[in-house]
Length: 293
Image (cartoon, rainbow, N blue to C red; front, side, top):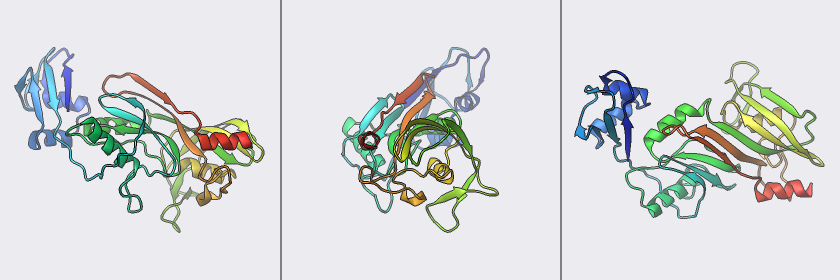
C-alpha cells in the first residue's frame, strides 16, 4: 500500500514534520523505516531528516501487515468502498470482532475472507465503529493501519452516527437530549450504568419517529461513543429497548433481539476530504415489528 503527496507548502521543511502534519505517528514512521516500508522523495529513497521542497513528490510505502484472523467466506454486504475504507452492513447476531464465544465467524473474519477473495495483499482490516452482537447496521472498517489511525482521530467528534431504535412504552417528548455520565456496573462484567458521581460524559439526542401500541420508533444520534450508551440512556429514562433483556427490555414474538440499528454514517474521507454519507433502512425484523404494532 502506498500513499502519495505533492507538497503544497511555500518553504522547505523536514520530511518528518510534513509526515506528522499528515497524521503519520512516530510509531508508524519507525515501522516504515525498520519493518519493510519505504519513503521516496521524487522517486529516490529518503529519510525523515531530509528536507521536502515546494512541489516535491513524496511516496510512503506502508510496511506489510499480518493478522491472526481466521478467514470466513460468508458474503458481506458492502455499502461503500474505496482504497482506504469499507462500510459494511452488519446483520444481527454476528459479533463485530472475534471472541472466545465467536472465534471464527465475526464480522472481521468475514472481512478478512473478502480480502483474500479480492486478492488484497500486505494489508489487514481494522474496525473503527463496532456494534454489539445483536445490533444491526453500518460498520466502518479501515482497510490499512494508516487509515485506521486517521479514522480513529476522527471518530470522537467528526464521525456522525445515527441509529433507529424501538423503545418500550411511549416516549412523550418529540425531541430530547440525554446527557448522563456512564460507568461500569460494579456487579457485572457486561453492564454499564448511569453514574451518580464520576463516570464518563455521554450525550445522546433522540427524535421520536412513530408511536406504536406499547412502544415507539425513535432516531438517535450519538455525540459520544460510550459502551452501551443508547441502551443505558434509554433504560434509565424508563424506555429500555424492546428485546434488550440486559437492561430491562422484553423479548417478543416479533422481535427476538434488541431493537437497535445503526442507520447513518457521515464523515469526511481522511485522505481525499470527500464527504461520505451512507444510509441504511430499517432491517426486516424491526420493520415487521413496527408494522404489526
